[in-house]
Image (cartoon, rainbow, N blue to C red; front, side, top):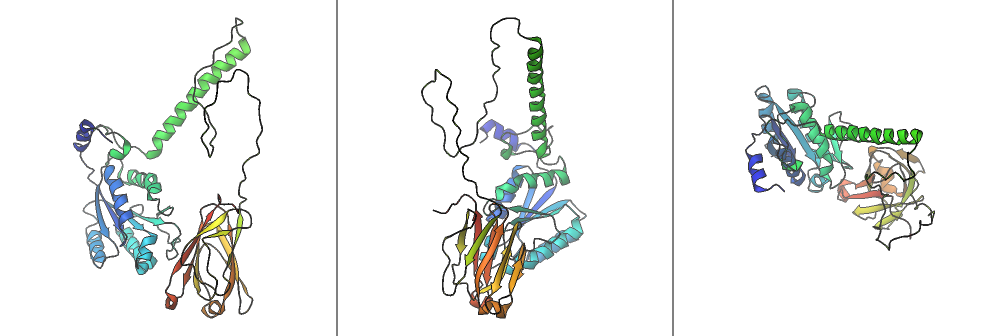
Length: 367
């Protein structure tokens, strides 16, 4: 939070002359959150519902006036848009809108901000995009800021999100610049202390007194439980070697049973450790799988019960053969190369087109 004086100083700074437009579907929460972040960085922001009936009219107006003032567009696509019935917009219309804006404003000015794992979305669209984990739009902030600085330079000033207002003379800097300067400073400090140590090592100490240790940054290993302070030790502690914690082997193989008339449990344990968290429609799915969606670093296979043919699937969306799938699929087998990746099934339209999501969690272990 800024104190009152700092806030007044911040509010007195001019906004950037450039304009940023944030579009979203009917699920507008993520769009408004992103717009708030961009506003904090002192850019003028306009928001609109890109799935609304008048969206094309607004886009055409921006295209017609593309030479009048610079603009940048972020189009936010969320899983909730699909859940609320915006499937046609997610499937194709948002991509058409992005390409139309791209033709008018140019490369780097139209960015798709997409929630990872949406089964309906074409991740190979060729457009600039930023993916974010489900429910974690904030993970895109750094990338969004980098796009803004690259396209609009120093026209925006760091706002409340930076922790303190900046001087009118200070320009917005590339988000990575601060990290680079800090890394250089730490390397320089390490070189100084390393030099002192080497000098002492080769010249020796002129007295029998011990050289006092130089105070530095305390290093600690991460642990799942915080360590509790104990009594002061008067003798050196005995070194105890502890076995490493069990780590799930990756890649992990996970088998999903779709046996006739059975429904899915909340958790499906995998062969090599880890498990799948199951959310959405639990089934039965034996005769209902119309499409399968896989994120990157996930591959899979299944066998049609009717003819025994094995079908391999990779990242992206795959349509199953309707007649064979209707006869039945007993089991799906997936191979996960990384934690947090997702797989989705979608029903046939006549069954309700409901979706189930399987998210791989390496921290889950079979009881």
